[in-house]
Amino acid sequence: MRVLSGIQPSGDFHIGNYFGMMKPMLEYQETADLFVFIVNYHALTSVDDGATLSANTLNAAMDWLALGLDPEKCTFYVQSDIPEVTELTWILSNVTPMGLLERCHSYKDKTAKGIKPNHGLFAYPVLMAADILLYQAEIIPVGRDQIQHVEVTRDIAIKFNNTYGDTFVLPDYQVEETVAVVPGLDGQKMSKSYDNTIEIFISKKQLKTKVMRIVTDSTPVEEPKNPDTCNLFAICKLFYSKDELRDLRERYLKPGLKYADVKKDLVERISNYFAPFRERREELAANPDVVRKILRRGAEKARDIAAPTLKMTRERTGLVY
Image 1: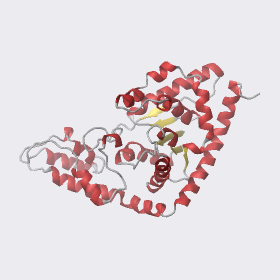
Image 2: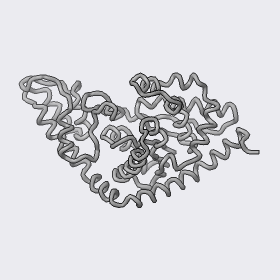
Image 3: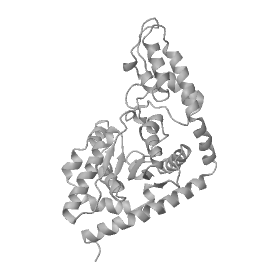
Image 4: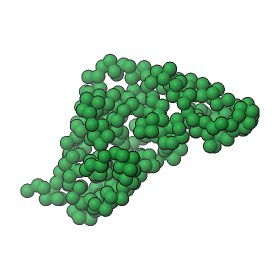
């Protein structure tokens, strides 16, 4: 089973990235043919400073490796190191109906929020399709907001296969329902665009500041509280065991619980959870050339897989003469 997913280097990773996408991907290392990549072409739709994107790309690689990604157990690479993906994007663009892209809610949502529309933003799903189809990936772990893009990938693959013959595997999306949407400090989906994130590798002082900002209701201490509607409780689910969560729920349902006490405990739990990863991250930051070497080797592995697919695609579309 080939599993593939990527993440944009658009800034520091937060616990929403980790529990929503990165942790499930790390678990696939032991059970699947895993492809993990840093989607810096996609990041061009939101990052327009070259130095920032370059630094973010290397930092993202360090974060992945620090969190436990093993390049010996997967194919780990940077999107822009694979020239085959841009050629396949153009080929797929010629079988992609305009209406298919016009229906994509991600483009509509981003432009509605004031993001300047351009071709890259509009054609984003075609590049994503090329990322997936180039490696004949079967399973694509995504958040709920990316399900439509995997469905678009399937539609493009079907159109290509019907036109030129059976070429691409039709991928399926997979959503980890329990952690698909990690809430942010304000209760919305955790996202840098909402400024409601808890970053993975911040200092403990910064972590405390973030956690204390988690929005809670105004229920008095002397009254019971509803854990099922509490944003703080939802975040605690990520760091408490089942037994601990059951005990916390019982505390919520009785008078006397102080949100501040829960927040202080949560700070310690988050700090302790990521402590070993922070140590590894510091080692990698001191040796960036080691990280670059890992990425170059990963790109070579990825291109070895991509080349036969692109060759077949070029032959069937008549680009070979």
